[in-house]
Amino acid sequence: MSRALFVIPQRLLSIVRCNQVSLITRHSSKMSEQPESNIVKGADSWFNKYSAVESSPEGTFKGVKDRFNGITVDSSMETCSPDCFPTVLKRSLDHWIQSKTRGIWFKVHLSAASWIPELVNNGFQFHHAKNSFVMLYRWLPTDESANIPPYSHTMVGVGALVMNERQQVLVVSENYALIAGSWKLPGGYVEPNENFIDAAIREVEEETNIRTRFDSVVSIRHAHGAGFGCSDLYIVMALTPLTEAISKCNREIAKCEWMDVNEYLNHPKVHETNRNFVRTYLEYKRLGVRIDCAEEMHQVLKKRYNVYSVTKVPEVGSSSSSSDSSNSTGTPKL
Image (cartoon, rainbow, N blue to C red; front, top):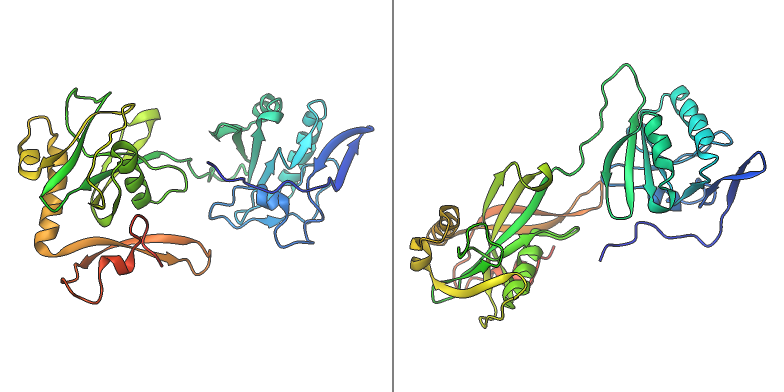
């Protein structure tokens, strides 16, 4: 379930009127009164640092300013009637051009979809869209090329190499496999706000009902020309099984079993790339190394992130072990 992007305030605190018509309703108090106003919360902050716009001319959109001297207007935070929108947009653009603002972003929710044709007529382009909104932008400076970051262009998936103590690999054959009857590792796409490790563990449980814990990153496969014109990033995780009884997901999986590793490495219906994942993991085990994961905190952004690095596998009986640095079923602890 997606998280709410902002908190709806209890009252409307600023109304700008044009010709006695309710023109813009700003869902915020004076933006300097709080360190983070509701309008700022409504912006997609990403890694950009957003700040409150202290003032704007009457009859214009206020929005929030980013660290690149751009403005983001969120239609759920600053509403405007369809009849008045062309006038307000023109006044706003004139103000932004005069003040040498660079990129202008409009986050238009479904309730304000009538804004879109007027924005397009005024030089705005589509940047990205989700179920409930579309984001449009316009680059104002005429003396420099548009410095607009591209939207997500890579689809990220995970595969799970689950091997038990009997040297058997957990394999699945999908209902809608590209090659009918072929065997592959369980896995799927990473969900929004989900760590790679958690995604691999979740996919295994969803497809086979087997619970696992993280062992090591095995390999990364990168390709282009995937769905929707995106690139494709596939990250293979080695997981240790905590249970072994299989109960497959009939909606996705046609067959699922524990296959002897030697059979897997020689099976005619296993793709060579998948064989190489297993060979790589076995080589890691022979060398006594793994690609571990540590969770750290960015000292400026105060955001948590995962760092993957090669490390030696602790010897049996050593005071440091994988259970000390990671959860039994998820992302390593800080």
